Image 1 (cartoon, rainbow, N blue to C red):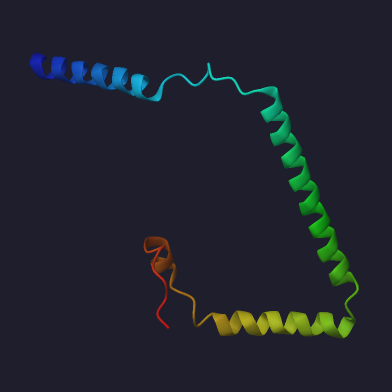
Image 2: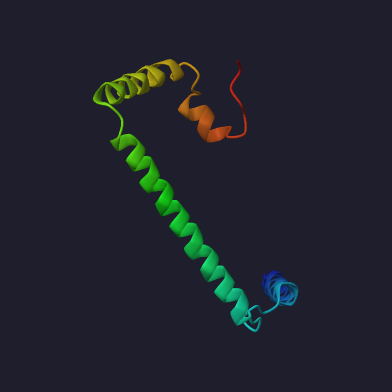
Length: 103
């Protein structure tokens, strides 16, 4: 029993040391200020573009005629019913995510 515990303890220590050696310490790695500033600017631009897109979509829906809005709602309901046939079962979607449905 003592030998087994000693073996497990030694194996654990060896694995820990190996994992530290392989991964290394990333806290010492410094990112230049220019890179941080560029990433921040890119994120701000992306956020602005997303906001503009959402506003454009809202405006598009706002200018539609009431008849068009009604037809879009009806079409959405019909599409939901039509696509139900092509949908895979919950079990299949959960346990076979890469599998495509048969046509």
